[in-house]
Image (cartoon, rainbow, N blue to C red; front, side, top):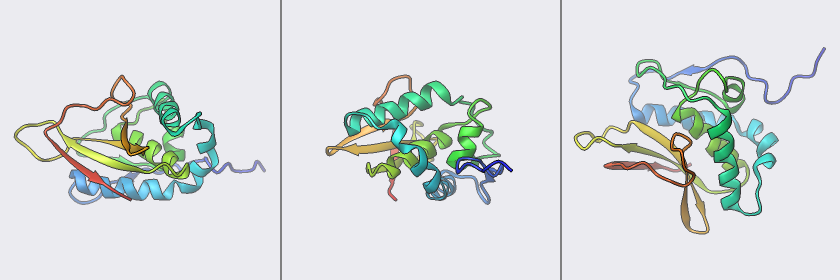
Length: 164
């Protein structure tokens, strides 16, 4: 019998229950990050650079070039553990899943980070996008693989930061 890898997913995605608003989604993402600790601890070393900023860049580049983006339906939002996201890397993940990868790995490497939710709509405070923000030497470092440049942030009207 083959030994099961710690990264082997359990083949379940958690459908976000109740009102699928940004804050319910963020709470479920937070739980997925915490549930991914053992998985992220086992692979985090692969992203280590010469300093924390380079480590963040390595992680961003991996996600940007290896995990396929596909927006989920607004009525069917999911959260996945790290192992499941890596298993599904070619079949589609969105900003929630990119955030789970980033925050999980950074937490394993003891690099402080938060989740940032933003609204780009001038007329609505309801967030429509989420990404990871690391704190490196007192500076924000943006890990948003939906943006084509590392450490760049989308324009927004409203933001909400969620700490762990």
